Every structure is written in structure tokens, then in C-alpha cells.
Image 1: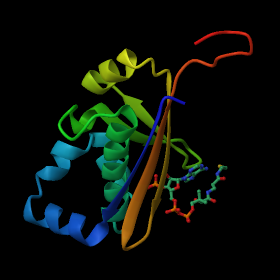
Image 2: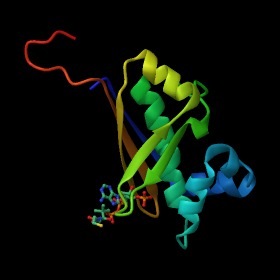
Image 3: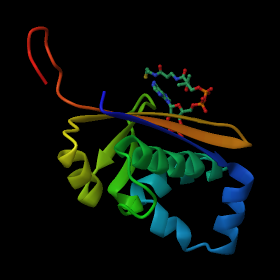
Length: 131
Ligand SMILES: CC(C)(COP(=O)(O)OP(=O)(O)OC[C@H]1O[C@@H](n2cnc3c(N)ncnc32)[C@H](O)[C@@H]1OP(=O)(O)O)[C@@H](O)C(=O)NCCC(=O)NCCS
């Protein structure tokens, strides 16, 4: 494991931000992420969890807000619902510099809070090999 990041977002605060600046959803989320959230009666907790995933990804890489664009780390869901990250652009370059070869993400959300954990991994080191 190269890094781990975690983030919590309060859904009510997040909802207020969206209500105040509706265009922010386009700035923060990809078309796929917005389309996924739109499938549910209340998409806010799901968007909040995706925002948490982007912040958790920054922590996992050891960088801060502004280091890469929000679209650079995208949450996509497999048919069974399991989430994964699609990483592009500056985030991908930062990950490459650190030797990251794979990403893991886990999300959870209630009406109150949304959370994400992101783990970045490097190549497997086998017994007898040096890193
Ligand atoms: C994963 C599961 C336990 C979620 O628990 P929950 O307490 O209802 O909800 P939480 O808020 O904690 O978690 C929701 C998140 O779990 C994640 N999730 C859903 N299915 C998942 C799975 N199979 N593996 C890992 N994560 C999963 C998603 O990211 C989801 O959020 P999202 O829809 O916004 O992306 C529940 O959806 C489940 O049992 N899914 C199993 C489905 C399954 O096994 N499918 C495979 C056969 S098709």
C-alpha cells in the first residue's frame, strides 16, 4: 500500500452548497457521476459521497485541495453496485510519480453523512524481491 485517505461530508451542508450554487455540481462531478446520482430520489448523499471520494483520493496521494481537478477522480459503479475510481489528468500524473498501480474505494452514506475511504497501491513485492 502506498497511501490511504478518508473523508466525511455532512450532507446538509453539502446540500446547502448545491442549492446556493447549482452550477457547482457540473464543476465537481462528471456526467456519469451526476447521471448515477439522478437515478435516486435523493441524489445529494450520493454526490456527497463522491465528493468525499475525491478528497480522500487527495489524502491518499498526499496532496491537498487544488492539486488536481475534481473530474480527474471519478467514481463509477459496476453492475452489482461496487464502486471503483477512474483516474485521469493531473491526478494520474501524480499517481504515476508515486508508483501507484491501482486504486480502491469504499463509500457509505446516510441522510446525515457521506464518507469515503481510498487506498492507493503499488506493484506487488514478492518474497525475496526488493522494492
Ligand atoms: C454494499 C451494501 C452492503 C451497501 O450497504 P448499505 O448500508 O445499504 O449502504 P452504504 O451507504 O453503507 O453503502 C452504499 C455504497 O456501497 C457501495 N456498494 C454497493 N454495492 C457494493 C458492492 N457489491 N461491493 C462494494 N461496495 C458496494 C456503493 O458505493 C454504494 O454507494 P453508491 O451507490 O452511492 O455508489 C449493499 O448495497 C449490498 O449488500 N450490496 C450487495 C450487492 C451485491 O452483492 N451485488 C453483487 C451481486 S449482483
